Length: 377
Ligand SMILES: Cc1ncc(COP(=O)(O)O)c(C=O)c1O
Image (cartoon, rainbow, N blue to C red; front, side):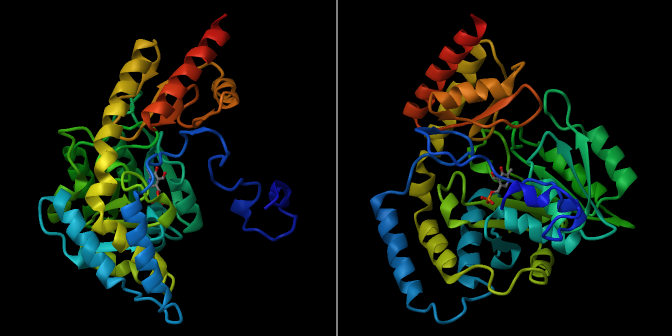
């Protein structure tokens, strides 16, 4: 879509007012040697995984004259088994829902539990798609603040919940773009605040990066048995190295999952998506096999950036937020000129780098060293 068509309320096409002048969301997709901007897993699937996925797609292809199982029963069963490993209890298939990326799953949550006259809240800096889900589900959006060190400000949360009585709280843990994880007591208190007579709402803990968390950082999945209003979203796009397949999922009380059937489009998960995801889940151990290496690379990147004198946010994810730069766009461009694409995101002055292979991280470090030397001379 050309940018001009959204410029004026009188322009064609006749957009909803709140979409006029808005740019479509998305990081630049550029063909450069070192892509460290969208927190992907840099390791492609092995030959064995590719072959199994291809076999599953071939089988699915022979049934493509029919609509797929709209309840994706087998995939739900496989996802439940996979989640049970991390949850510390047996997750039932009825406690699982899935969609085309966790983005779609969270949009469905807003469609089901938000809507006109209702409010969703989060705490900045945070994932920039959240206000878009709210807008698309005609839900009022309110953003509070985190502490300056990006940790969660529970007093601010209590104040906002009291003032706005939100229907949905959206919180990533680890947070994007800061990498900060939420402690269990914060999640527990938010769930309690949101489950009171006259003020019921759901608390979504977006664990897109949970598999990268450091030892000792818990998963919100463990809290599911205690809170009927807790939703924990996950994705196959990051640690699972399957961003191209578009499969996100969540665990929650069966009634919450059931409610999402009201807003999903018919047969929203194609037979191909279901087959690819199930084949990938059969290779979970292998696909997740590089997570430890990526975590080690993340920790050494944090150390290296700190040693260079940058401010660095401690990270439980596969990216690192660092700064601060008087002109971050200029620095970003200079890195790009050297073939290294990172992301301008977060508070002014900060940049985010995704963790890639050792060779990619070396290219990033070399380029950053050169660029900062240039800027300082
Ligand atoms: C915090 C967070 N949540 C959710 C997503 C969406 O991921 P997907 O739709 O690929 O599952 C992303 C993607 O970058 C993210 O950073």
